[in-house]
Amino acid sequence: MKILVTGGGGYVGSELVYELAKNGHYVICVDRFSNGKINFGQTYNNRIQIVQNDIRKISAKILEGVDIVFDLAVLSKNLQVRKNDKEIFEVNHKARVKIAKLSKVAGVKKYVLGSSTSVYGQQKQIVNEKSKTKSKSTYDKANRKAENDVLQLNDDDFTVTVFRFSSIFGSSRKMRWDQSVNSMVLELFNTGKISVRGKNNRRPFIHIKDAIEAYKKIIISQKKKLGGQIFNVGDDKQNYDMEYVANEVANTIKKECKIKLKNSPDSNSHSASFKKIKKNLNFKTKHSLRKGIKQIYQELERGKLMNSTKKSKIKDSADIGADAEFDQRNTKFIRKMNNDKKLLQKSKNWVNHVFDYEYVYHFRWLGRPIIQLPQDMIAVQELIWETKPDLIIESGIARGGSLIFYASILELLDHGKVIGIDIDIRKHNKKEIESHKLFKRISMLEGSSIDDKIFQKVKNIAKNKKKIMVLLDSNHSEEHVTMELKKYSEFVKKGNYLIVFDTMMEDMDKHHFDNRPWDHGNNPRTAVWKFLKGNKRFKIDKSIQEKLLVTSCPDGYLKCVKN
Image (cartoon, rainbow, N blue to C red):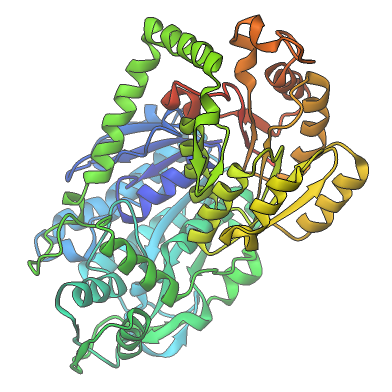
């Protein structure tokens, strides 16, 4: 699906663009990028089109072939003190109505306007979508005008929806520190204090990941449920007053903290109902206030969200772009590296040559021989950290180093188990593995990975596990690997990985296969090619082998793209 996101370089937009691309959509990211471009990393670069432009200047051409428009581009509330009312209305109202009209003419099917529950202003009763709005600020008035005007464009061919978001919190590649929760966490991190201007002011909150899930609901929901509708986006259980939020920040971080409370009334104070979105779109939040607070603080500690912890006021979170800049530079050089034909050939030759010296046998992980190329282990570590599997299944145990490796990453994540399968688990290897500190996360099955009884045991263990990673590294004949792929691919769901080792055999000299039942034309890579011809759920994630250059798994990193 082709989706255009305005404000795609902002706090929510940047995370939404990445998530949509990750889910297989082609995304046009429109933003002025006045504080620097966002780098979305190399993995989904081919699915993201960056368009640097002011939304007031957008033409109809960019909307050709677009299925959905997510309109997030606004001048944010904290900019109001620096912008005149005219510019705020130009961008937040008129420009967005123009985009909606252009979208309708271009044949876009669905249009979503991102708005805010702050349009309700200050109200004592719980507000819902039918409640009267009491917009006070220019920001809220412009939002309300935009809502009214775009909803009038809704018809059978053009579905218009308005999302009124709760106050959003959580970490982003383009942080905003003016959001209440984010601001409190940062202040505690920098000063050991939390200042609250209006302790009794009340508002609804939502984690940024849940906000993104709401947008994803638009993609799968029927237009009869969306057309001409306004939805409050949040959770009935996440309406809090500011004193509660401050105490929750302090209690979650468990750091000595002085909370300074004032009782200044706010023009934006209310509780909201979210029954409509729950009923109509089956939308439920998954991320708690505590979870978001903890994540922000941990990333501040790791230096991920800011370059320093000085007590100076942060002018703009876009200045904190070291990671994005780093990724952008990497992307450029990976592309260049893979256009260097001489280097690619040298890499293949190097792998071919070092196997004459049993190179992969030279390495251990936490005491056990791992028998893998180190480059592949780094890649697998990245994937485990990214996908956070509930279960990792590996066929081929050997000396157990890889099982220990996977278990060590899961231990750091404090989540997940590992199953190892081997037709012959030798006694001394079994003893060493079982005596290892990380064995608590490991179970082993002895027998052929394609044996029906063994497979049933794996199915029993995998039952109710949602996220599973599979790694195949046992018998390397095409027949055996093909049977493994057919059986074990059923465990891997969308967004997770099935990794086939030793696919490089197709490129290696024949002497490496002496006295072996595999050869050129009969190996894990040919099994992968055969498997993919009849299975559309998986695609080769070329970005991994492209950055590794040296790998035993060319064409072997298979990503599940649909369930």
